[in-house]
Length: 371
Image 1 (cartoon, rainbow, N blue to C red):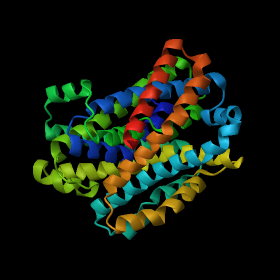
Image 2: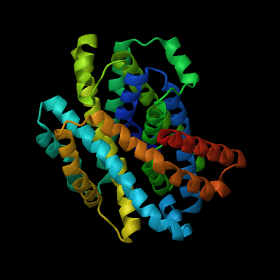
Image 3: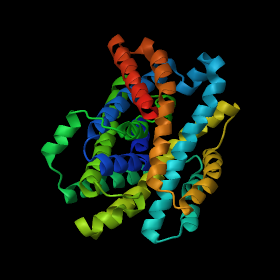
Image 4: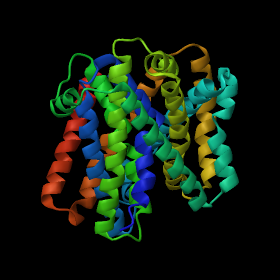
């Protein structure tokens, strides 16, 4: 059975710079205490992505089309929320690319911001040649995974401690914000939207296996990010751009280089997913076709000046990444609950109940974040 398919594309969203930010912030602040959130979020992502694909396969229409057709009175409220999702995901990728170019090339912010829009140029050059683009994206995603495998080997984590915190929930004071950022970075609204639109042509068994395989690997990479942060950065006041400087004296120069390369690969790879989802959102909002590079350019032009200005002013990029993922977590219930309702005729009652209960958990974490 071919394990590469729509779920491969979608899984790239789960290793984007927003995941870097959420997991590094959580690991450096709370150690391994929130590792259970990573694994739980990964399981929820697998479940909801499977449901999203089933909706597309069985109904012949994507989630955005269902929202627009079946929730017409609420559609005007969905449009700004979906635009916020597209902007937040683009912002996280843009920040990741800026920092990666700063780290690898030693560039000032304004030049790194200029190079940070390289994904727009790639989309313009490749146009609609999706196979070439996604082949490149697959390579970049593999680089991210291999880089964190190297980091894990270097930090030599205590496996018993990792297992304990993977299974035993803990949510101390102030941790809800970081838990929400992990959920938003993992169960991503735009990835759920996209999967239902690109899954056509598969049978349900293939879709299920591809989803389990690809998102299972992505969940493991996320866990590796937090484990590395917990062992290398816990108790330190860090910015994402300072991570290589911390890693190198502890684990050697290759550790810092691997992190920087992973961040660059992550930003470039995840652009593939967000630009497809952003294009779908623009097309449904405007009622006409939109070229992928135009969609990316639209959202990037909105983000480029305020992002570069904020970073130049000295705002901690790690905090910026965390809050973009919290925004995604806040919007998430607006996508999850209709998804389950629309897919209910095509899934088992038990799965629907579990999916609704998981949606209630996400809402609870969001509420705790606001308290």
